[in-house]
Image 1 (cartoon, each protein chain N blue to C red):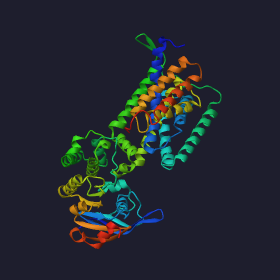
Image 2 (cartoon, rainbow over the protein chains, first blue to last red):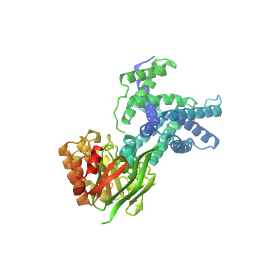
Image 3 (cartoon, chains in turn orange, blue):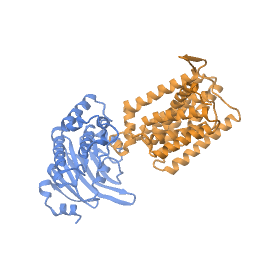
Image 4 (cartoon, helix red, strand yellow):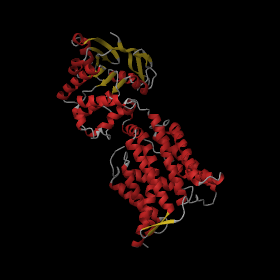
Length: 288
Length: 238
């Protein structure tokens, strides 16, 4: 049952989950805003990255840090391929984008299921032990996950708001023709952004694979979160995602404490649905 | 006098329908040339073909001795042709300053960019005042100024303006005319102006082309042509 003593733990989990949700959603939001495409496979990419990390460290004996980096690089390459052969090819063709997304999702999920069989896999911890801050003991695993997530998040914000690439990316999402007329190479910017978005999802997957364990459906769980928080934030919003990510993280940390079993996840999503009914266009404005 | 731009017999198709047919047009170096005509005459299509936004089926576009047909928009901008499109196509959620920065996307000469920025702030003091404001919150006239300013930031040799007066108040249009003149005279930028507003077009231009239903129907010095039947017909679709 809920007691106030659990609050610090809930808040810590909120931070960890929130940052991971945001990190994964950023790539989705980039693609959504820039290419007006819904990448339904984004959650599956997050999942397959975690599996890649696990198998790279298992089969080649690499440390899981190295495995995480290799996995992120592979997924960045996958992002390039997706941009070239999916988003660019089917630009403005909603049906095809959805179909291909579902197909990729199914293929990756099946592959993961075949690879792992019935075993429950976990990426070995990136850090062990715990740190005591004030009166609260926090596992180093959580601190590390949160820390890496936060650094990448700040780096992404810097990229979007302060660099030439970020500026061009915003230009493309706001007016494609206008962007082309400034001499911006739309395909190149799109490709880079896809690669970055997929790599961010990969790193989130690798971290979560240690935090929550691997499963072929972890991508579905994440996909739902991504869609929820991008919708809640509203199209074209990036700062909004930062806030809805934390809200989603909070709901996902709080409900398992007060409600048992799968109902917790359902309750969290029900709240999001209610919020969407109140504000169908999302809570935040355009700034991307 | 040499021509900075020579368009020769270009044809553009949208699917199977002909949008413009055998259009030829010259812009002399350092001059302002205007293209007039009724809605649907193919003026915007001509500019889009020039900027590489729509493919040219036939003919050639020669800019300072180089062939442009088949080149990407990026290459065309790099060579010095900038199109300020109809409807402005600004980046509404970005600040005025960032819009201007994006105009200079392909440039690397920091000093030149800074000089151009100062020139623009001189020419349009309103933009300097509002440089931190989002472009979408500007008035129509200010947005048009920003669109032109963003074009200048690319340091063009030929600036193409598509209906800059659209939806603007007469007093704003007058200022616009003065600005276009200033850009042409003090910067030496050749200008190709597509306009429906005859006062603006004939007020600033040296030479005029009239289009009707995808074809060129008349051309001549502004003083001579403004009274001809062809222009009247081009306008009234006669």
